[in-house]
Picture 1: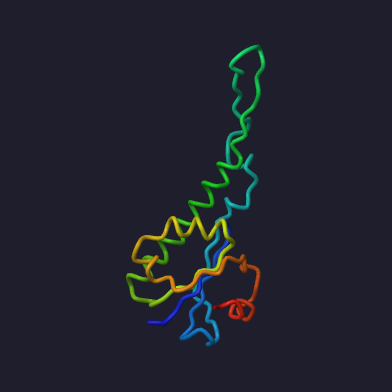
Picture 2: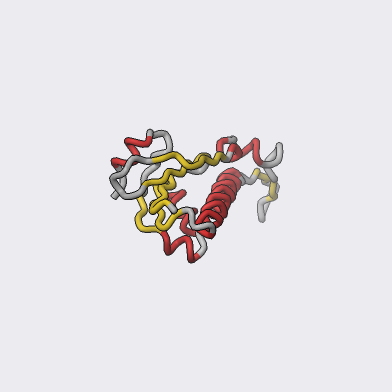
Length: 142
């Protein structure tokens, strides 16, 4: 069992690293991708936005469901990550977990982590570091 795993994630990509301790070199473990999070909301939903009538008068306007669709895709990916980590924890592949993600996605991950996985989290870094290399990520470890 590796002592610590480091999850570096955003709404469309995640990488997992392992380390024996906080200052040890990071070893790449796995990566996950969620292509739907990169798509424009119009490509995720229907072709034409829904239309509604105003309560009074003849006016009509369209409904914008783009933000809701993007939020649902972020949650879907957070659940996928949580599932993978929960299975790895069950197999005793790591003892503790450090989570690095932008503030919004970090909140999504917290929401999706089951209690046993949340208890394994020893540190959270609210920064989007997915584009950084392993050395830069290690510099941000608390």
